[in-house]
Picture 1 (tube, rainbow, N blue to C red):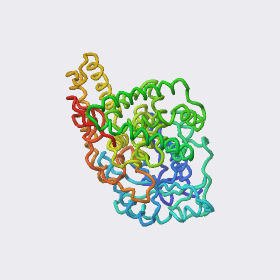
Picture 2: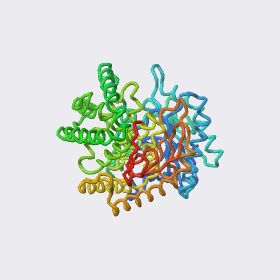
Picture 3: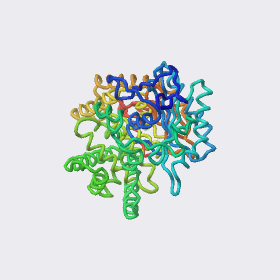
Picture 4: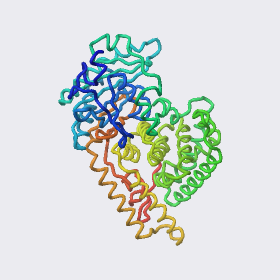
Length: 493
């Protein structure tokens, strides 16, 4: 048997000369799983991410002599080859520096290039077309003294190795991927209760605007009417509170309506049914109302328990209704969808939703902050506690019929939570500010987790402040996000 079947290092070598047992997210308390060769590495990829990546470059860090999986980065493959060299350098630097910041420099890296064949294109052609990108990634990692143990291309149900020169081991026409559910990794994942949520393309499709002409025309007209009726009121200090109350009341009504219709087994059918339960006018009014940050923060309180599932369906449905010129408005419902998914322990779905929110509006601070916190694997309970505090303080104020005041003890507690979260996220800002730029040809922001986490892309990173942020986080500093002192500046982004 060729040595490449036994090891994950290039040409059948690893730092120790042994097969590399790999621990992945979700298997922390389980026995380690030994992956032998590129076939098992390729099969393990969706289990490390939680979905099958499409049109993606993925970098996985390996640590120690036995090659334990560490941090990982995913980025849409840049469409222009001119971007490959700078993107490769930035990805390598981001992953290595992120691992170093967490205290463990990687000993090696595994690279995956995943792209389906285009019309009239074969998987082998995809592999050859992306070969220069793979080489630039290997060179960029090597320049940082971190070798690439393996570089694989996955396309059309087959995989190829860019590192193995042996045609008997890695034939020119590629090797078929293992049928789903038949590998040792699939068995271990099933035992651990880990699920692969389908392809990245399918997950994104549940969140992208509908394209049917009749739907687009009807929804755009409703959004035009809602904008004309609500935006000037959101910007009016005296009228703003009424709009907020009406928006939350409508959102609650729609959450309750969806709760009366449990989701169906087929996701596409279920999403279509959810869309039919919400009129164009209701969706438009809610989408425009959520452009106000304080309203959005109140909606973020539906984050746990049975109502979280129904709220998530609502935010997905609203994101699908942000059609035409209103694409940027999707940042609010997408961020809420990402927050609820993260709060309910669905990190893969959270990263996808937050990545699309940043695609819709790279300056949307709440999405950037949550994306970074999710990637840094912070505990969402910190933010949940903050939002619970805001909800209880508001309820106490309403009971006393003094809407402009807050309960002192609860506010102090919420402020303490915000300070702690700000300090924790602040420690990871260096990675976010040095993150790879997607550039005009990139498909989506970077996703990261583990020691290499914290990267995303956008036009600029700017200042990031959590939970009471200057320009978009939940909570309530006197800055327009719901001030603890009752100040109120609103926003209709």
